[in-house]
Every structure is written in structure tokens, then in C-alpha cells.
Image (cartoon, rainbow, N blue to C red; front, side, top):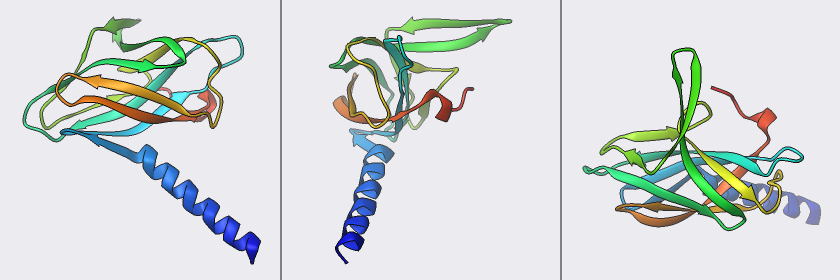
Length: 152
């Protein structure tokens, strides 16, 4: 009986944790699917992804992202220029009114650089996003190994 109760509690906690990762609301913005890649041995950088939906009638902008255990987090864009893959740092990312932006591998994404420690599976990774209108919001990112993430 006691083991059964513990199992039920673990399932409920897991469901609650997944719900926390599912979406966060800040102002008119809804943030969902926050994931960060685990690091590979010897590498002290990672990449992070999420979806930002703007339910408002005016655009907003993601101005910066910070993570207390990294030197910096940069907003990047990756795109093809002819047959060359180009990546550049952006000063801000526009979130269109009544629109959505997906940060994903092969497109817009966050580069987490100068990590003080590796990002491992199951680690607590909380980053702070600063928006021009919606303000600051702390987001819990779910860790995923590179093997478990799709490349676009």
C-alpha cells in the first residue's frame, strides 16, 4: 500500500513538472516548450529552444536572456545563404503581434556560453528572459540530450 502511494505521488509530481515546462504566461506572451541541450564532455556551451506566442495586438521583443551559471546567453539566428549555413548574434528578437516565434535547431535559438559547469540530464536550468514590454520572466528549461533532440 505504501509503495503504491509513493508511486502515485511520483506520477503526480512528474505530471506537475511537465506542466511547468509546458507554458508560462507573462503579459501577452505565452512561453512553451523550453528545452536546453545537455553538454558533451569537454564543451562548456549549449543551446536552448522555446516557443513564444504573442496574444496581444502589439509586437514585443526579446531583449536578453541570462543564466546564473553561464558567462552569457546570446540570441542567435541560423539560416542558409545559398549553400552556406550562416549564424549571427542578434541584439533582439521581434515577437509579432498576434503571432509566434519558435526558437529551434537550425533557426532562431539561444546560445548558452561560458558555462561554469556542464548541463546534465535532469539538471535545474532556470533562465531569465527580458522582454521590452512584458518585462522579466524566469523560465525552467527541461534538459534534453543532443541524441534526443531533432535537428532541423
